[in-house]
Length: 322
Image 1 (cartoon, one colour):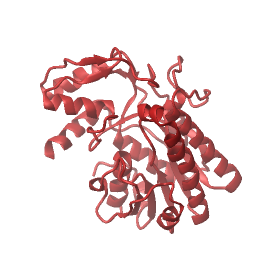
Image 2 (cartoon, rainbow, N blue to C red):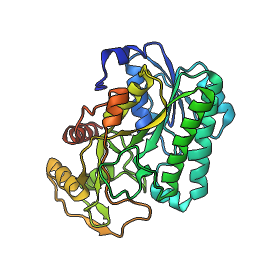
Image 3 (tube, one colour):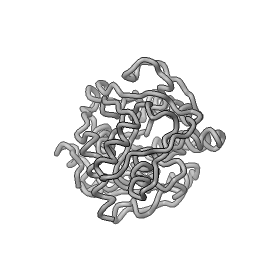
Image 4 (cartoon, rainbow, N blue to C red):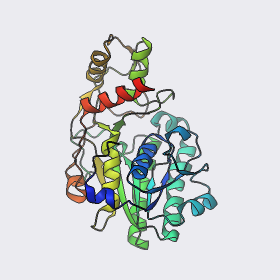
């Protein structure tokens, strides 16, 4: 298990019970497997609309329910020290198509998770925030002290989630951490969804001998962060000794890469052609994004330990072994 954790952080989870909402999803599953591997007890709440039981660590107790189910939340969070709130409608295009559902799941759902955590006496809630909060910010790298800019229902919902976390910290004393994920990729990411993340979608197409699809001209840039770095950030935030009150923290690498460069790298690694199919840009998508990760470094001692090349190698190795 490549968890890249300081010994004292790993030791802090021994015998500790945690709740992961969206625990059968891509990131939630990685958090759960890591917590289980270092001796924690994992409870997952996931309605399985986008997650899979195969993502759960052995021994995980699953509540196959939505974050909108108050009774299920109350039962799932009982006795938990930490909550990792990963459950969400995660697709920008899907949020544009279904803005009301996005608000229900991502805003009302987050409020319900925070309330259940408060009532259960949880020590800290880690919220999966998003770099989508920056919108089409012309000034790079993205810094947390800049005003949020919602270009999609998804972005709006994640910004609202941050405000909810801050409000619960200020009014109810519930410690919260808002981790603004940039473009997360890695092993076991679902490439079969219509809204698959770009790297997993590229891999699926390249392995199948078909042309990957690029929405736009391929010159758009992203900060691609391997999922192991995101897991590490969550566990560092959970065990951080300082007070946390929902301050947003960027979780990325500080490096930007355009999509055509990503495709070329992946095609070379697999020994395939990098020919692709260009399609119109999608509504709500942003042009450029890269993180300033200094705040996360200062607050929770976060630094990425797996770079893009190593992350792609791990992803390909996992796929090849399936």
